Length: 115
Image 1 (cartoon, rainbow, N blue to C red):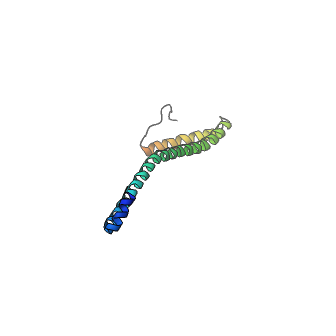
Image 2: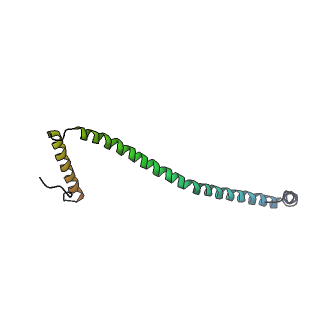
Image 3: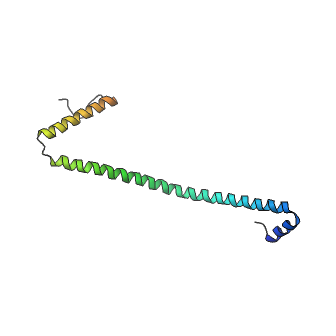
């Protein structure tokens, strides 16, 4: 920082020197502001990342719970030995088989036998 008396003398003595001093002070202030902004951003970035991760986790959890819970509730409330359940089981097996075929698995999952 420049002493005010020195700055006053330089204005009276050499106007170019006064302008150069003012420009130097402005550049110094801008550099300090940029450093402070960078430090603040570095401190805030991990917080933003944690918030985004938590938001994504909570959203996926809520959506999956909202889909799986009603489906499980319906599935467990339907009697086991009837054509509706047998049709859903056969359709599920056919869908899994087609997905395996498309993805190149080719085989059946462990524990299942071909009908």
